[in-house]
Amino acid sequence: MSKISGAESQIMEALWARGPLTADEIVQSVGPAQSWGEATVKTLINRLLKKKALASERTGGRAIYRALVTREDYVTGESQGLLDRLFGGQVAPLVAHYARHRALSAEEVARLKKLIAEFESDDD
Image (cartoon, rainbow, N blue to C red; front, side, top):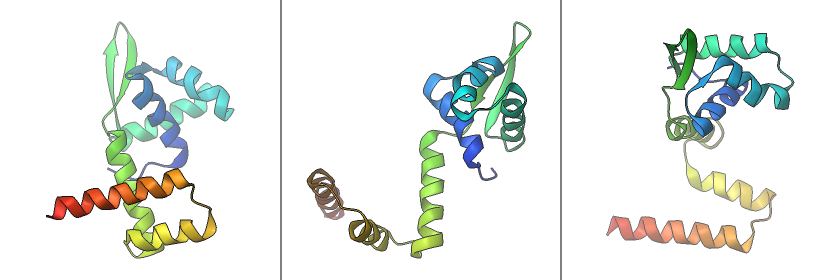
């Protein structure tokens, strides 16, 4: 599958959140927030169909679109791409970057510590 663009991800988010939708439902869901008209949304849908990120089924004379890519797979791919491009594929420099440039809340630090403890216990 080809990379999903930022604009295309808005269409995918609507489908992940609400399930299969018609083109009109997608337009209503993402159009106003993005200031996109029907033509723009349909162009994005067609791109996603070509990328095999969406499937289209005819029901009652209308096309219903559903995601073929899960949100988890999309997030995993995007996250790995970010790590690879900016941090040599390593997580620690990413966390260090955010810790230096953005104050981590006590809750975020506790969540990170819990994650590390879980990973350490999984290694045993």
